[in-house]
Length: 158
Image (cartoon, rainbow, N blue to C red):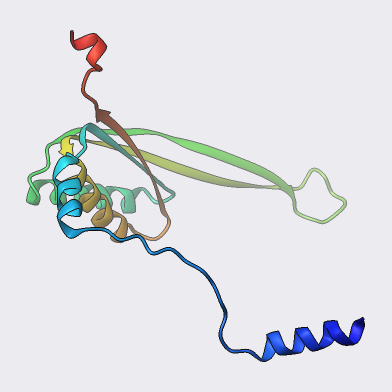
């Protein structure tokens, strides 16, 4: 019994072709163009960009960069909000085990800035976000929130 299993295994391992059945989806180019024409672009009433970092000067420079990008691409810019920093303090002993009264305090400050972009389409938003994400400085994190415009349902329209 083992001899037969070893023979089958060795012949399967030696064969270079694998028989895999796949179904290729055939799409007519005319149908594909109709599908692309039917789907409208998304509309966003606002995009909120929040970026954080430990260096205030880097955030200020990146804010200037974002404002210049909005100006050159003619994207309407909303409010710019500089939030208060978040302070994190971690006390630690100077020595490993003893001398509890001799401590060090490690502190980090995270500065936060929010920028709002108003009334953009989906393609403009994706291009804009890709560009600013590629040029984000080292040590800066970004969070993006979208507010999308949707048409009213038919039950409410009537």
